[in-house]
Length: 107
Image (cartoon, rainbow, N blue to C red; front, side, top):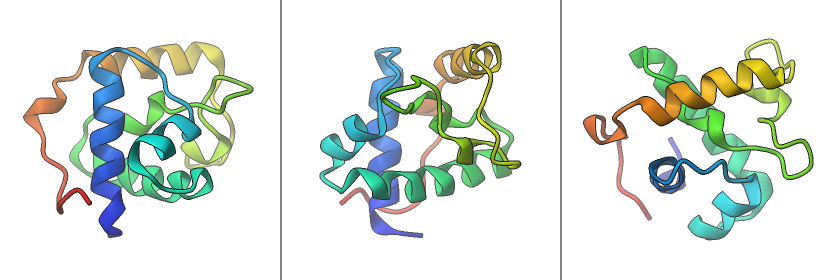
């Protein structure tokens, strides 16, 4: 796992607590990494959440133009429909993220 992944997790969690849907650029700016690298960390977060049976925290991070998660959000690389995104987003917002701790140290 990359050391920045926990920092991305914590950044997205902070956006979740205010019920915001940040863009990849918003997350990158908060963590201090290049925006194109955010996707790699979100994938690791997605697999970590899936392995624990909890909502996919990365679901609330969106493309600036479409305001939806990118195609790589789903296993079949198809973008989410607006309806499915709204359901996933609510699952993330309603989950108690303080009850889980992502491995590693934030950088």
